[in-house]
Image 1 (cartoon, rainbow, N blue to C red):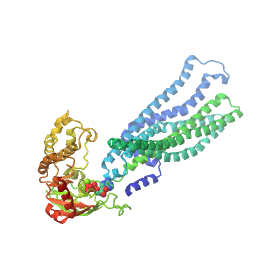
Image 2: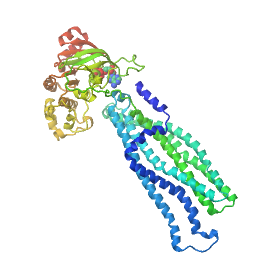
Image 3: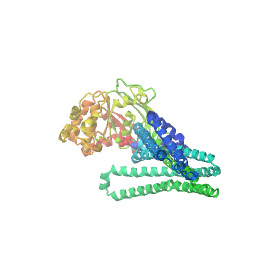
Image 4: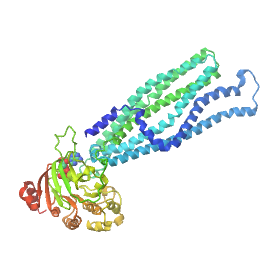
Length: 609
Ligand code: ADP
Ligand code: MG
């Protein structure tokens, strides 16, 4: 947990700036061709608007209306047409280059974003379970959808203006300088450009505020999605416990908070344009004032005003870009919290490949706490597993027994490295699990979890997901062994029946039988069944028992069950309590020496379970 906090603090302490974006420019490499094309089009656009328009007004108009020079002779028609067509010509160039600039740069921007979204998703597959305990599902959902969306909007609008506006600006300034140099008494127009540096101050200040507000807004969006996703995952409880009002209130509150946060962003984001417009209008007013006092003709002033306007406009736009950029940084920061999260369970640098698994397990001084070993709260919260020392021989069938909360599920999950030990180690055939190739290790374990999950796919696909290098039976055979065939045959599409999200079209017992079928199909040398038959009626459990006896032959098996009828298979019983092993031996031995076991066992015999 501490690690995660650190990551967050580091990320926010990092001064956001162009440097944050640099690594992402690397993603443009595969798209350099459209990117260079976009750059060129942007330059053409900028020159056509910034320099082309004022120059055209300045140079071409006097040719068409030569009255000012004094000669009343009209131009020949062909020449007139030539001059007049300069007009649509400039706009044609400006329009075409503007269009292709936008198109190509959007292409690059969306491509880069797609890359970021995919890497986040891939990263989520590698993160340890602990990460998902700490972060709300809805907030993660919001990061992958909202924050990438925000980033996309920003990338698009930024990239639309990023090349055009500076080039337009430089073009317009050059036009102004040319005009100022060509005529006398025009140097003052350059003075009007002095207002531009003044605009920098509000741009910077608003940007700083906006970054903070945008971060707040995205967090609120995450909060709102979190409420929604929790709500959608529990429709049954909400109805059964009359929680509708409570849920409505919760959603209303988070939605209000989002509204407030969003309005703050809107407040600051829209402040910049009017501020800059007022400053620049003042600049233009000064130019007009000066022009009227130095008796310069109107037709000389108009191109100057146009050029001035064209040089102020990019400043205004760049202010908008800055706004978008800050909001994008805020989203990027939230995405980077995921992208940079610690992959605590990762492949060792030189992973050992498992060729033949004998299945001998050794737990050496194993301790584990969900709070992590470095956390300050360690000590206050008792660890889930404490000082476990066990050896399970190859092919042994062991039952883990104990009250709920004893740490059975935690211990079983550690075989697939769902969590790593805080202290001590687990050895498989003498190899520390952390040194073994993750893929090979997970292939070697068939786990039926306490709450199995089926995907929204067909029955066949769900069973086939269990495939491992050890698989030797067909889907039909394992369905038969897990006594699923009968109810599968009742489905309209049999094995091609889709199961709905999380198999929600199945009963608890059917779900468990399909989860067992998946484990049977997997056929791995280590078998872990965590309350795998708890939802079955005694008749079905009895039937599956035979299949399990068959399946566990030659496999190291960990059986976790509350019902003693389901652990008859086991030749050895390990009793756990409060994270510790309190007894270990055959049923008779343990029954003789462990009071906890005796109590648990006798109570079930009395109730006839
Ligand atoms: P069992 O399977 O024996 O019922 P578990 O292994 O599920 O027990 O839980 C052992 C202890 O660890 C319990 O005290 C439980 O509250 C705690 N625990 C289980 N899962 C988590 C988790 N994701 N985060 C924090 N604590 C957990
Ligand atoms: Mg459990």
